[in-house]
Length: 92
Image (cartoon, rainbow, N blue to C red; front, side, top):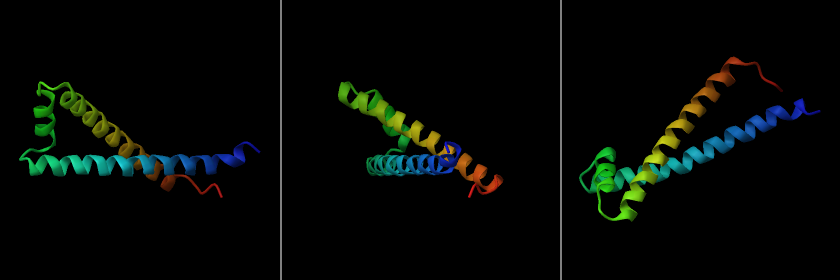
């Protein structure tokens, strides 16, 4: 009985990964657009923010850096899931 639920649990996990990646993609894309409007690329904008004397701006730079790293990990996980799903036979 327990093993019968594994495919559904895996599907729900993949959906959660995808949803999280979609949300972070919007956040990072908005930051990139704001950066370009200000004349920077992403790393340049983060560098300017990190050197800002205001703690709030520095903290936001750190948080955005964490968002970008997390998005990269989620995209990598999604790629692995897609590859694995093509390699394994259907569970249903």
